[in-house]
Length: 164
Image (tube, rainbow, N blue to C red; front, side):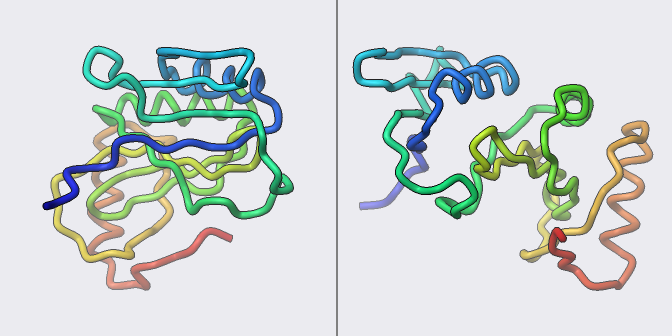
């Protein structure tokens, strides 16, 4: 018997319409089902393959700002996608905690309207011991981003620079 992967996760929320808009419009997830009476929405990044990977349902009892989970991470296919999110978050005024290289991934940590930390990330084919996190400047051309990530990986400084 073995776990084969994470199927889906979900959040209790206060403002379902606002949260639905964030994950549907801003992140681009597809709503695969919803029930207004139960206050629940199901989302998928791959609706042709998976009915849902993410669920929102009304009923949150924790105060906004209380830590409920560490993060929700969303994979992107290309560096151009990550850069597009970098620009979209700036244009939408989304709170970004940090843009980073993990050596084996580039990511953007950000918060949804109810303060839940998310990450969009690009997997990089490197085997790098974790935790490894250094701030990465995504306001550069793709080749400069890759070069900066290589420099940060090799610079010998502290491997883990937590967000302030």
